[in-house]
Image (cartoon, rainbow, N blue to C red):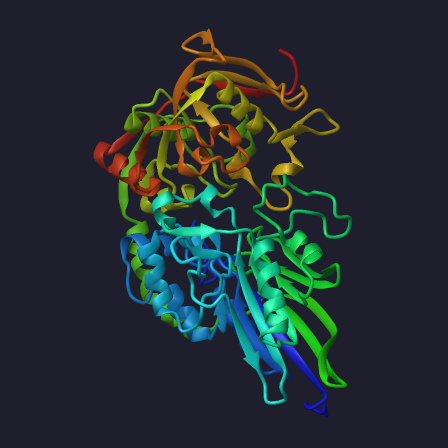
Length: 532
């Protein structure tokens, strides 16, 4: 038996990017899936039975991302919301706000914080007026009877202002995580006299963990690698945001972990600490991922969320209209992105009609979007439009439009057979289908056989070539209008109009007002694999 005065084991459990997925059930068709917070809760309970001290941290993005999360925030708000109620029941020790925690506005955020039985930690989200951390203390310290002191420092990706609606983050500043960590970690070591420092960072890795080669454009969205390399004194870094499954690796001696998304994995870090002379030292640290596959759900969590899920199902299954004309179902996501499709044409046409803009761009967010069947329900709206985006009309130049199309054209590559496929840049380190836009109001062609940056071989407006210097008004979602998705040509451009209503509500209200919508197809754009 271990002498706790000389040696100790501490286990850090971490979830990240749960995105409101509690029960193991698909919101698309009601079928069973093998992930969710209820299954993760079972794994957590099992880990708490093992020898050693166990801490449980969530690394952010838990309040948004599923139809349940949307319904709780926008349709049937309650105090506490069921997601926080589940986390209270499981017994989280601390959470870090992710970028999506801000999506529903500050009032909702503060409501959910007040209902939480655990602290929210973020050292780099500060008040513009006081300069103090907005969420209270930026860290939490645990101390055991043998004198071991462990700190968890929270950090949030500082890229939030590039995506979020300004009124949702009014009065907040998001400062550089590395600068913040360089301030707080020496303070924790020297002033708070902690023996172990864990950084929980809602952000991911911008470089390959083995080679250090850049794995994405270095925008500052993900700085996990730099934190490990540039900030001394970190023992472990818990990461997220990228939805990757990472464990069993270290960077510059820092143990790293990232537990996927939607409750697919529970991250586990095991620390062995020995008393050497008058200091406690980490002598071994290992990270691993515990899969929730084939794990039974915690029935306490299932029962807790059941009333909310039933209310959601009734809301989602109500019919709101129908489709006439062309088939608006998406059977092949790649093919839908290769040539004009009635569903995407309809999305863009709604954006144009409601905003008054004559040009529009939009995306299919993932490969699970089914489009519309003949009968349309709220479920169809929610599954196809999973983000709480609003609409913005920007005044841009013809050159901006071409540059944006060239960015979208990078989505494709040709394989050895000359066939078009999705570029690895849009699949790794996580799928980014939402960063490929399709346009209406202009005519264009993408030739994937050409070099990147020179793939737009046709670009016209009302039958004439688009002038690079002429200005055009384009409607798009607020994420893209802010430059999100590596579209810097849109950032800072003049805003002509904003429609501050969630697209889910816009689309649902539009269909309800019409009763029936007509699917059309004008074939204004295409993607080819060579010269025609």
